[in-house]
Amino acid sequence: MNITENKLYKFLIALIVIISTIALFSDVMENDSALYASIAKNMILRNDWSNLYVRGLDWLDKPHLTFWLAAVFFKIFGFTGFAYKLPSFLFGLLGAWYLYKLAKDLYDEQIGLISALIFLTALHILISTFDVRAEVYITTFTLASIYHYYKAHYFSFWHIVAGSLAASCAIMIKGIFVLIPVFAGFIIYWFFNNQLKQLLKLKWWIAILLIFVFIIPELYTLYIQFDLHPEKVVFGKTNVSGLKFFFWDSQFGRFFNNGPIKGKGDISFFLHTTLWAFLPWSVLFYVGVVNLFKRKNRTDLPAETIIIWASAAVTFLIFSLSKFQLPHYILIIFPQFAIITALYLKKLGEKGLKIFSTIQNLIYILVVILLSALAIFYNLDYKYLAIAVVVLIFGIAFLLFKGTSVSHIIARNTFLSAGLMIFLSAFFYPSVMKYESGMHAGKWLSENYPTGKPAVLLNIDSYSFDFYAHGEPKYFWSYEELDKAIDKKELIIYLPETEMANLKSRYQVEVLKDFEYYHVTKLKGNFINPKTRPATLIKYYLVKIH
Image (tube, rainbow, N blue to C red; front, side, top):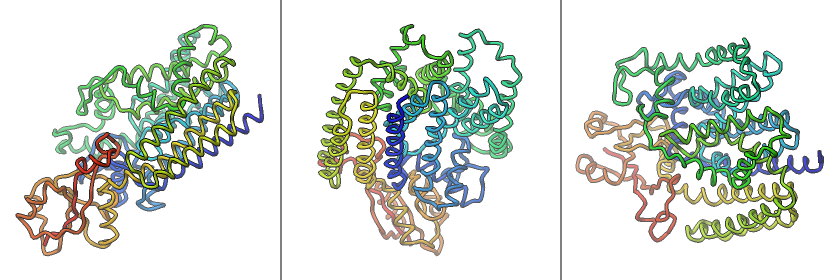
């Protein structure tokens, strides 16, 4: 084991963690991040940790733990983007630590360090520091469960308890399907090693029992919000069971596309999603997977490696066959991808290292060209400074790590991710977030009317406004609702330009502030181009009616 290399990997891990913290001080993005933040905010405002509300109505989609974690941090730090993002960031680091521990126990410390570094520098992990959803939590909890069950496979009842607690937390983040990446690897490992009698061992049945014991808080909250109230209208229906939705509709209903939330599946979706989401490691990962099909490349690996392969393969297959697909789902098996990539990297000979060093050089050139073109074409603030910073970071990478060794390839990839992170957090996202009108309107309202009664949103959704405005804004979907709300006090409304003429025909309207909106998580060429950008923007207003 090369101690000097290990020190380098620890330094690189510390570097990417420090750079990633910049994203913690950015604002919350539409849609899912702002939606989850507003739900957690309303928990605090209502002092109700059992019921989930969106737009003032009962909400049934995700389990509670994501919102409980955010609400705890809101209690400590207030309603800020930093408070919302911090727990996800910390759990991401915990996931990297579990990844290190698992790979270290399976292989050695160096594989553990490389795996953790690959995980932390993958592009979609970096993006998830800005656009915080639930997947980083799920990734950490499923990985922690795999680690503790792996340890429990040989000894320690307390690892059974810890593994079941982690699995239950993953379930209370996303749903029951997370047990697939947790247990699939073990069952397939037992099958190939003639150990299916493990299924009869008491400790694994205790593990299952403990999972169901630990998810009782989730089951209880669903029961009291929905099952006790069949009169509530959810998904346009009454008699909706929260428990049935939790165990079936939210997971299997999406997979078979017969639940209340539907999608359109594409069996190749996660193949091309992984190609960009796992950058700068995706080429190495794909070649590493193909490499595993050759028996000679598997002979010197411990048998338990099957746990990693099978967990990733089964989960990837299920995602690909599902009819409901979103890019961030793939994050859940990034730790397994990282281990596969780390193992392949360590096996590369001189010829392979030269090939991938050349590919890496091409990726560097391509990234510089793309980021420079984006900065200039979009007309970013401080665009030339942004380009200079990226070029400087990439130049330092090649000055410090000139060779084609494994450690130098890893170091250059880390600097590539660091440059991307700085470009995104310091230059790109601040420029596009100017068009998060709900966020800016909510902030403006809180600063200028801090003690007024909560505003009204008329015929629109805006979760970022919901989060950043003071209090809990009300949602009106008709002018009849608005008429009933009118009293002697002045009412402030947030609405799209399309509603202005109708509103002015009914009331005396005073425009307080206007804002420009674009859905910044779905960027398209006509928005990026400054000449065509105005045509893509939607105007929103904060108005006062008398």
